[in-house]
View 1 (cartoon, one colour):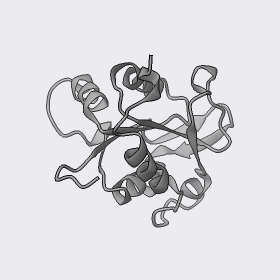
View 2: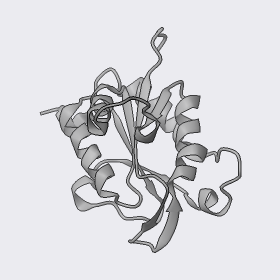
View 3: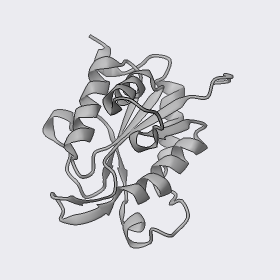
Length: 161
């Protein structure tokens, strides 16, 4: 994977503190992003972008759709079943043959229509209880590296037909 171009990882997820209505837990999604997802993607050598980090004028959705389409890899945290995140995940699946990693809290269910797709279970508890802690070692970096090496050249299996 030697390449002069740094791979772009776009992160799909909600922002701030949200209630996971399936478990009743309040999840600090910003903390999960800063302590688990971002460090893992950076460790895998990616430039990481989340929608709230886009600093440009104009329509928000234009930049978001461009990143969903152009990103080398997307990580979608669907823990709280945020409608926007679910919609963006669907857009990614329909538009792009490149890999997408679905992240979910270990205690949260996966909706039926995407339950057949492998998802990476993340323990959100350390981020909730100890948000001041340094990045939490989740193993997501290993999954990212494997996905980039194994699937980036061939793309998403959802486009196999």
